[in-house]
Image (cartoon, each protein chain N blue to C red):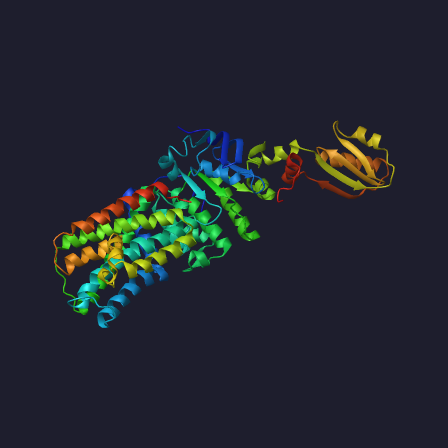
Length: 308
Length: 255
């Protein structure tokens, strides 16, 4: 019996004393996709993921992971998921390969450990104890431990926090390989570009609630539109330009000689603007297209910066 | 790694294999740690050799090694089952090792079983080493080996319960400090190297109820005096084991 959704969370509430960490959260992860849970620190990302992993008991709401209750069916669920904690999880005196081999032994059909060590560049760790590994090496080991058991679903809690750009790329590649091999992935992040690069679906969360969910493209289109800017002689006939543009597009001279066009900025629109300029003998300069990013979406939805 | 490498094929390893692997890892971690070796091997060995060779404490009639060896064996059990286990488990909890293993296919009871087996393996190594040294120093043990085994096992259960209770409730640094302090206090006041009858009468009756005193006294009754089964000491250890393991099971926090 194959379930359509790998994770189904409805109305999740989790309180720590008087503080409500998660406040009526809904989340759906489709099987075989990558879902990014995006939000600032303290938004409730880790609490949500750890509830799915069976570490926390919900105060209200239902959580189903691979069709199972993460607390009541823990013994059945755990062999089927891979978990990367935000930090730690390894004996301070253990070596990277030793810990990874150990995790492999706890599974029935693990990956080839040597190949995985090479794939993640952990071969250079040699005989160094975990506590003396660099932050990046510790992160990569935690990632390897999450996938070594060939899980159906992996939870990665901030998998690239503290990684250098090259290691970050390599982690992204691995996530893509997991998806193309049919593994469902849930990752938390506060990096917009990570969510845009990797995720089929993004759940934007703030103050314990999902405030927007959808593909990165949908989310970026859903908010304010994209913008095209150019400079030219002051006092151009905006009314005539607007007639040439599709309905719903806005144009304005925001400063003398500085023009802004907002709407669905696509190649056709750009061509329309430049040909209108040609017809009117105008040489536009400084043409720029600003794509709306998840960063803008977040700012619009919450009125605050993501990394604040 | 080629396409299809990560195609899901989940499953837990057979329980026996998981417990064996976990026991082997836990034992390696115990034996690799320098501070742990100081507690479990070097201190008991030094005390045995030093106090047997030099008349520092009046150990009563007979060879001092015959008095000291049972006490040192009790100390070895305490150092591994209580002090070592408390410190190691406290830091495993602090660094999320227990948490991470909690999301693995290894059930919690199997993790605790593996920890217990690792303690027992370490104790066997300690007992072999200390016995060899004691024989070299002229030790001549008596008594019922079955009673000795029972005392060591009950002592291990009692100390494990107390060690895990500490590791599962206090901060790792507090556990480190407290476990070392308790080790030192019980070493001095638990009849390990200093006979309990050197203390005032009132103190003796209280100290005699400590698990370390019951274990060293029980071992001494058998190994030095040839008693068949020291029921009083076994009873004290059993009560400590039930209380300690019960409290640990109730109050232990995994994160």
